[in-house]
Length: 417
Image (cartoon, rainbow, N blue to C red; front, side, top):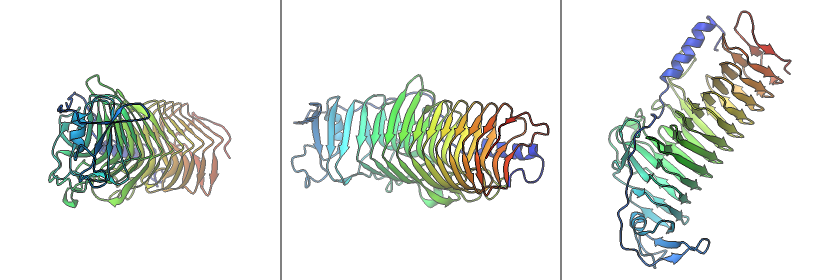
């Protein structure tokens, strides 16, 4: 176990080395807008909620015989800004690009499943190609509701282009009640840093503000839900994100806010993220996490459930809040790991962690009222971290409740229970 043998400095350096080597989705910079091709407007119904026109799409015109379109993209091209596109049950073999204010609302059984996917945009950071099943770029107020987005027929045969299910790129809107699945390459390519379920990204002075709620994301290769870059703000609420379980390919993250992005992660369930070669704290080049906040500040992580991973909640940043989450069964590492300053870790419930319930590396963090059951060390603080308040935590079946390797403890440790 970490800190059980060897010097604290050696263990800390080993841990930070693992952190530095963790593979993450790249930060993004640069701008590229995708313009929809205009088409002659088709006869449209009206949305009785807001009097906006409704365009009807049916792949075979069986369920909706009056549909004017058989492809979603054709309806997008024809729709005036603010329109609603209703997608009838069926399988839509197409990549869809949106660059105007729209609502796309699926009936139950509406599946976007493109085959032979190709690049339709690029990374704002690196310029690397991206193939997105649904791309929303350079616009605002785009709502996606009740669609299944399935990448099983992507037929991408190399690490590039990066496979993405739904991509908001310098764009804003709402994603609700989606099922995003099978965003992964063949087994021979499982080490590629590809396969993102939902991706929100800003760059070149652009901004993205997206609410992601009530969606199911699973069978992805790298990340389930990802929000990166300064200018990005996300509200990730009440989703279920499920990893592949033990894998030797890309180290997975269930939900990620990183590289200057901000927002909140509230009421989600994320589990089953395990990188198999990580068998101990000294033999672990990469780790898999349920929720990752990386190089971002002012993020709130609240009332989520995370388990069966190498770290359930992994935070690298300052002034973040990790409150009232439920964490269980973290393998090798910690239930909650915090590397940064002035973070709050309050009233979380952590059960069965291999290394420690809560790991702290940084200054002026507050760790209060957490409940830790079954961990070798309840709260583990690295040498040299100062000004942390550790107060009123509860420990059960935890032989070492608080461990501070500093020879002369500079912490003010209030009584714990």
